[in-house]
Image (cartoon, rainbow over all chains, first blue to last red; front, side, top):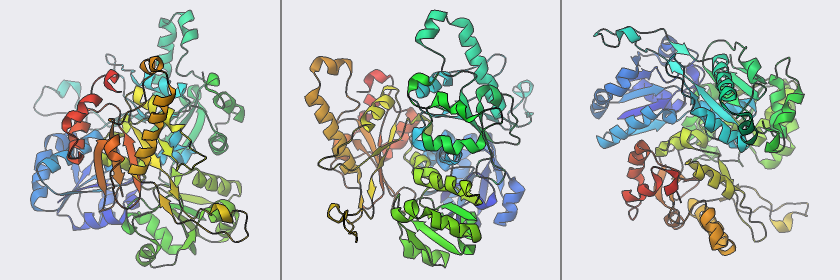
Length: 297
Length: 297
């Protein structure tokens, strides 16, 4: 049987009782290590589970998936993933392949950032479409998420931005070589994401004619209220409420980070967010975000 | 200390290891029993935890919150909630009150329907705003969610519909009496929700002029593809893919149910959904839901 087990977001003890029982009885247990990370490493998990784990990087999960699944045809094999198993497309694909091969499977759900983000006090039903912000390179600077944020903001909805992770990415130089060399892992921080978001509106301002700007204002400005979240669900969790500009100058420490671009703020949300306000950001900052969408931009 | 612990969605073993350790050491443990339910009852939980639970109904959580929190000022008190603690506004409010009273608190996250819904194969980042569908009465038939579904569908996004739950609702006759009498609990099924959704478009058709309909088509029709989900995360989980009309005639059994109104369907999503297709609904049903939003209506 093939088990896909969500580990939640914080540390070793965020696994469910059901998940732990399965981990203990499986003959092989893989730990997926490239779509997300916990605040503890493989060793801490091995110690807590009392068993060995096999690191499964992108190549292993995406290219050698068939060999993992063939093992599961004869014995109990588990793949552990941070958050919930259906948070990443690659895991959905894996379950589909198991189904096609008639290998029985079981999913064990857990918290993911998609629901745990509620810890900042913004209500989950006030979020629009979630976006992903990728690392830009000199030659590749996609910004399709900008228009999604805009659609959300026009409707008064918050936008959860999932920030890029680069784990075991081959260096450009080694791409054509037999023996790949890897870059050190990178996890996008809220300040890096905020800087990219500011660059996008700076470019918009350069390229849009003033009369067009009035008809179709920017999706957000440097003064738009944002929520930065780091290490959600762990004892080291940090939440910071500030303008986008301030967020671009803020260091929330170790990964993982997520960023929310606020839409309209409801009274209960405002009251809750106030505890996380940055020093320079007074509660009057909420004023622009309350009420009608006319105040949004 | 005050602990707010998510129980996940399925049965007793979906609690996290962290959550279970806290439950065992608290002096009082409340079980919130009106915003959602597990597939097992209080007794099964008590047996698994090896301790007594106190049922906390709406009156208890919303009106006697202060007394629960005062207890937490002197001893360890936990409130258990189905899903994730931040799924319902009332829990956010409770944490805020704890903060205001300077009572230390800890949150233990878990899966909620907001992320576990990925089990049907629709990708979480392709969902728009989540809506709630309330039970209609003879005199109260709100349909504000209709416009939210429409905004999502115009953008090609799926809509997760959370379905109403009525637990320990006083009967109309007893509202003014000292001793309240309660209606039997009700959990909206996917067929009930689908019937209400169909009634809304039937009304729209009656009231809109044909020329207006062409400019602004309906948010969905009886032929729109939907996904019905029942008891997500439990061994009795059931997923059913059908048109809205078929869904209105389908019985998915015991609660809880959720309904998704599909937007545009991506290839991987289509491949995954096919396993849950109703007999009369062929894979050509996806055709209307793929590609450009022009095909959406």
